[in-house]
Amino acid sequence: PAIQISNGRPFIEKCEISSIFCGGASHAIVERCYITGNRTGTGLLVRDVASGEFRNNEITGHALYAVEVISRGTPLFTLNDIHCRHDDPECLPGVGLIKIGGLTCDPGDIRPVFENNRVIDYYSESQKASGAVFKNATTGIAATSTQEKEGGTTGKKSISATEMRQMRASISIDCACPKISEMTVEGGVISLSLTNKAGGQIRDSTITKSILCGIFGDK
Image 1 (cartoon, one colour):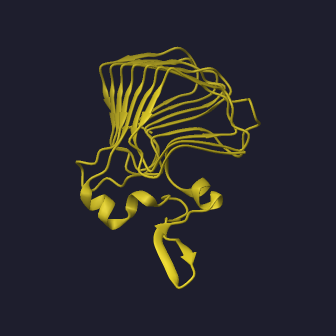
Image 2 (image 1 turned 90 degrees about the vertical axis):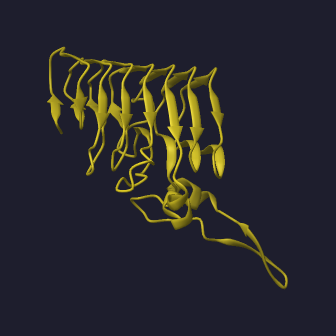
Image 3 (image 1 turned 90 degrees about the horizontal axis):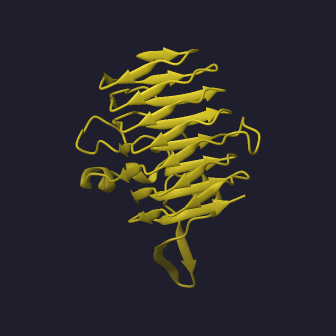
């Protein structure tokens, strides 16, 4: 990472940064920064028991997630603009914009707070035509199945729950219980995915314009 924070309470403002990793028991305050350009990983990672406050940042253009939270602390994300860099032909769609939790976490341990963030997950026509946006960059799973019918196929997509779980989601909540409020989420193949005993609170939010599914839940 460009900046790695393992302890303390640093204040970072009005900087352009390729990536920030916050770990340990740190409590970073990051405001009005442009976090972009990590072509091998995540833009903003919060892990261990780190908390912190992340406000008014633009986070875009990363090979993996824009934001990933696997911390048992309670980091706050508010008023951030988190989006795809579909104007950059060299930037892959990635595996999603926000990942909260994961299989290595215990249910309920991960409880970040997201308030008033704008999450925009649109793609270029060339990315749609190539099918890249329908694949999870980790598994390579794509929506290619068809629904069988006597005398042939209907031509419609028939996607199992297993395939849906492996697809790219704009916001993926996995075995975590975040508090999400007043969020705007636009686009994405799946806009919001909740898996593996995911819980928490989602309220007063707008989720629109997904390609396949707005909200997918499978526990």
